[in-house]
Length: 585
Image 1 (tube, helix red, strand yellow):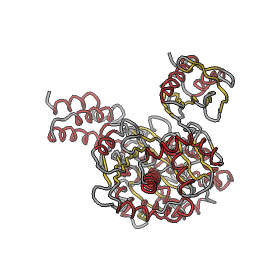
Image 2 (image 1 turned 90 degrees about the horizontal axis):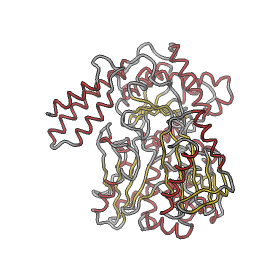
Image 3 (image 1 turned 135 degrees about the horizontal axis):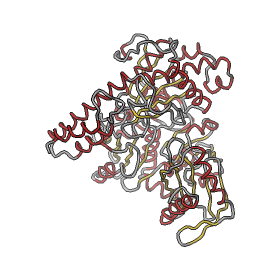
């Protein structure tokens, strides 16, 4: 079969002409991407790409013209609202959610708790301080941003338009401009078919539950009523916001740089000195995989365009399909960075992979892969012991206990909340470093939002200041404070909601004093932490944590052993527990 006929067959299978509702556009796109990836020549690849472009034009039409309700009810969670492009996120639904945010500021006039969480006194102050608007590299990002901007303009809200930008840079923009809030059209690291909508209030961090709950409620009400007084009758989806006279163009990276420089006294990062050191040190190479995401357009400027060869960028072209991969920092996705560094002669090698909206990052020195479980502890040690800063460390309960061991020996406190970056709000101005197991990090004096850029700058600072690869620095820390070997995974289950929670309640049988089989031996549970699911700490310092996903019919489990061999055994133990309570066969 010719390529043209294969493309026609895929289209016939997935697309119902003139019917967006019944068409499976992203199934078609994924199959076409697989064909493109297997193409034998540039000409063949271009044929597949033309087929992909044709389907995306249909997705764009659906985004523009859909007027009904989303396929799934709008629901804001820790990371905002996510759904399928065209089916859930389309111009009208984004306009409704934007209106719901504005409606929340109206309600704040009579609700002190709302005002406190918003950090804004009233609707008038919100309009004057304004909103920062941006999006990641997803298909339809500019189009959805125009829908949000149309609602903001109709209500007289000042607009700082950043265009394609990272989550951390947009958060910095909110702080630098003292904006009332931000809108970021991104589903973070979700697959190519997803769109998303993140909202941060005036503190520039993930929104508190009172805010996400209010947005969810009002969005539902407005989807029914139309919210005619907040949403213009016609959404301008064709005029680029940056060309409108009342819209201020925002350079989000410049705001990020301003924030880092202004707070050098708090975190100890001398940004400009670091860039100068990188430019003149020919013993170091930095390789960053942007996975086609929003970071790709900023990385050169972030590092002041170092001499040729000092910075190598991978997957830095525009591709909303992400080349067909799951666009997240992972061991599988790190392989191109490892291959690139293996061919480099420099003694100091630093590699990183960043997710599409630039809020997650994972590292390697070309030999050792370093996830945030290790890097967060390394960053804390670096700021505390090398930079001479004093203060606690904050980490989610599902993160490695390496940071706990550091804090104990350094005589500092640990703040260990449940999973979710918003849980760090109580210690944003106290903790030197706050990080989570899913590759997110920030530092004191920076944004309260996870930020891959600050992680990259820290990693470069470590490498240059210590004149050693990250893996060597990690080994030195582990030799002094202990070796920890974390892992995490998840399983799809048939239960959700209250039914799933009732099943997980059966894990209470595993209390202090209970025994757990790990491989051929037994371990005793010495402590249980139940602030987020159930974390069972065993008598050798290893642990198992099980919690439900907040967004999917999944149960997630996290483990940490004191030897690499036992990590896999703990994963098996976690699955055995889930089987015992009836969630796995």
